[in-house]
Length: 113
Length: 112
Image (tube, one colour):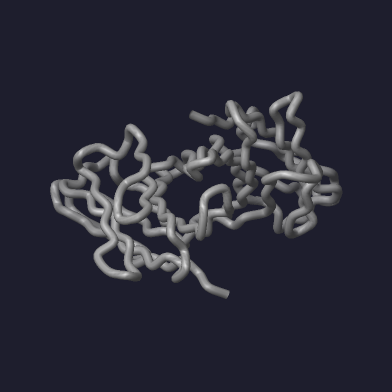
């Protein structure tokens, strides 16, 4: 069964550094999402992406964040200058169409020191 | 935008007892509703979903949930809890644009 994959599983970075989190959505899916979950808290929507542009973003998704689909398979989340409070689990999700179930990846744990 | 409330932060039940986890949502249109389970350090596993049709939906691991539009609720139930059900449970509501909003979660502890 096709799955969403994410790399790396755990990323440690120093404050102020740039990080890129990578996701490979399911191959025939068209809509892509990033969520984050700070330890012990709820899952929060960051951004949705369709047709090579952002469809919607939350207030969390400020200018430090960007997303890209650099090729036909990867979907990336870049944090330009990480802060301590960016430490969280980041989940990627994809879906073939609107009004449908999203399929989540296993997550990348980002630790900012 | 849609929102979800899970009133119970932590619930403890005895193994073999029944379980109900509460979820209330706020959304102006027909909601798409989901329950996910998360074990410590793990990702999100979909238990069940409601899009339309029968308001009582069956999921994996013996879980079910009932959509009640009049109460804006989508409570999760299981008739007999197993020790392996101990985890964090998240209710989520999706919009027509598919961005999902999650509740704060309910942590389930199962007593032997």
